[in-house]
Length: 174
Image (cartoon, rainbow, N blue to C red; front, side, top):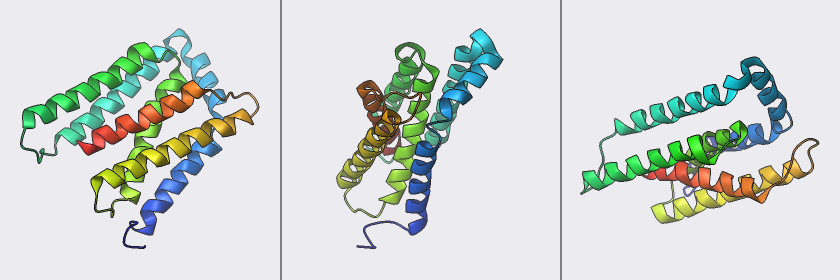
C-alpha cells in the first residue's frame, strides 16, 4: 500500500493545506472586509489584477516545460483555452472577490493532491482520485460554513470549488 501513495511529506502538505482552508473560514470575511475598506471601490480591480497575474505567471512557468505530445499545436491550443476560461471566470462570471480566490485555492489543492497520489501507475486513476479529493474537501468546506457564524453553505460554491479543482488539474495534466 505504501508504494501506491507517495512520500509522507506530500500527504502532510495536502492535509496541512486542507487544514489551512478549513481553519481560515471564519476569518476570511474579516480579511476581505479589511482590504475592501482599505482599497475602496478599487478592491475588485486590484484583487482581479493580482489573480490574473498569478494565473499568468503559473502559465508562464508551465509553458517552460516542453510538451511530450505528438501534436504540440493541439497541446498549446488546449492550454490557451484553459487560460481563457480562467480569465472569463475571473472577469465576468465571478463578481465576488472571495469566489475568485477559489480558482487559485482549489487549483493549488489539485496540485497538492496530484503530488500525494503520484505513485499510481494509471493517470486515469490518479486524476479520478484527485477529483474525488477536491469534491470531498470542497463539500466539507461548505458544510463547515453551514455551522460557522456569518458564513453560508451554498451548492453554487461547492460547484465552484469542484470546477476550480478540475481547472487546476487540467493545467497540471497538460
